[in-house]
Length: 404
Image 1 (cartoon, rainbow, N blue to C red):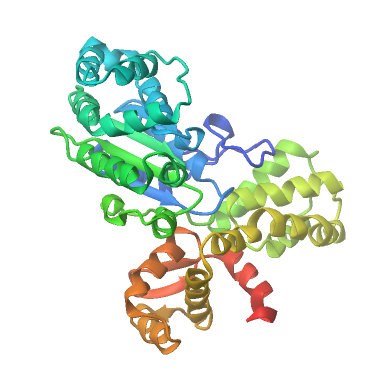
Image 2 (image 1 turned 90 degrees about the vertical axis):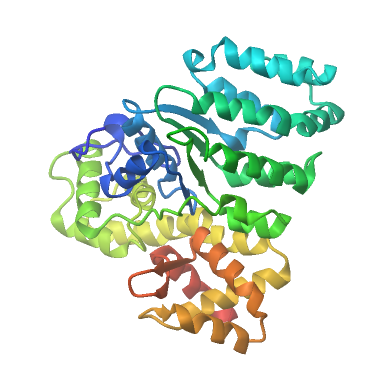
């Protein structure tokens, strides 16, 4: 995995990038790669379109020469059988081996519907969307799941499973045939997998919504996913953001077309320097054919700001709306307490403020966990203070001021 900054970049937004088109973030991906390579796990949750998928792509690329990497996009599965098919399909054929197929077939032989369904899953064939068959599959999941985990753990090199959009899978399955009990069983099995083998099975979970949020809404057992630490994806530092913008300019406009004053104006108007935000705003400059600072200001006012509201700020509203009124009220209170302390709210002061507003102490931990995973808050462990996560949430919160 190269850590050299590209000098030219294509203008892309809304899709993950890799290889020569990716902007390296060794400060973020490097520690994750080292964790996973030694058998430890990690998770990364946050807003959509800030670069999580590109980060996962960089992690997979960095692990390619030192681990067997299994990647599955969990949001593409609506059932556990579909998820299992995707997972097994992502395992390289050399690592599957006849031993796994034979062992699983024998275990699944406890029920004829399972034989038929698992044979189709194993061979990557479509499976019937029969609720009864899915319920049977879920009932036998705990019988054959250990065999999959043990086989993967027995490989001659470190195995890393990357689950993209894992919380969304849990949300879908909790509303399916097996309900909450089936999801808790799956979470427990995956936790057992992470302890298997001399190296341990490493897992990297990502999602555009936090697991704590889904667990709260659906009544899932959050402790099953509390062993991997949460890794934040911070905005690009100022120098990196400037270099990133210059690479976009070099790759998309004629030399000399953008002046230094235009670069400064663009960077000053950005609410935050996430790569996705810079890409989005820069595309608007291309659409507007910006030629000077005034063109940039006009494009921000007429195109970028409405787009940020639609594609970024509304994510915060949606996350609150997904909870019931009671939980949404508590989450909003948590943001309000932290926003009132621009220099950071000492973590020890959060609870008194929460209780003073009439909220129960036992809800505090859930509220903080949800707000951290969903991109509202950042917990600085060095200072032991809570901050609003970044410029995006600060901009969103300013828009909320008339309604507070």
